[in-house]
Image 1 (cartoon, rainbow, N blue to C red):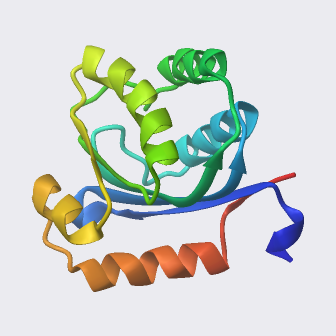
Image 2: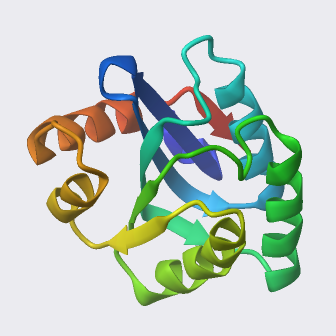
Image 3: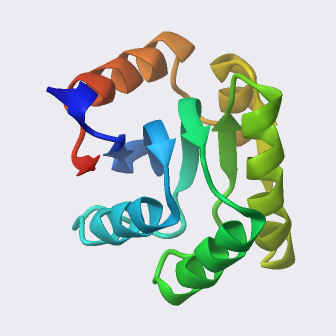
Length: 153
């Protein structure tokens, strides 16, 4: 029963496309995000240089700006943190989500990791230059929402 969890997330790695699809749902907290990223890095197929599509359309940021700074500091300690050649396309649905992702985005820019934010998947795929259809990405996202790998109370 996913409704009992504050935050849940899932990802799928597509090695043939060097792409990671990541979906996050619910009330996010810094500790939950950090633990999720640690879990993701344990995956044998994880590669810090893969491009990513991060769906935050159903994620609520319930954190302070100081939490954002702490999150970025913790990310920088992880192997996939804020290094590598990757590009990330964030999918959002509200101005509130965009504001928080842009705070994190500033730190990735310093690390020379391009990120861009979109309200739709098709332009995100185009920007990343990946050969996958928007419907395939939506299907993966739906599957990850139904059976996430990470649950946080």
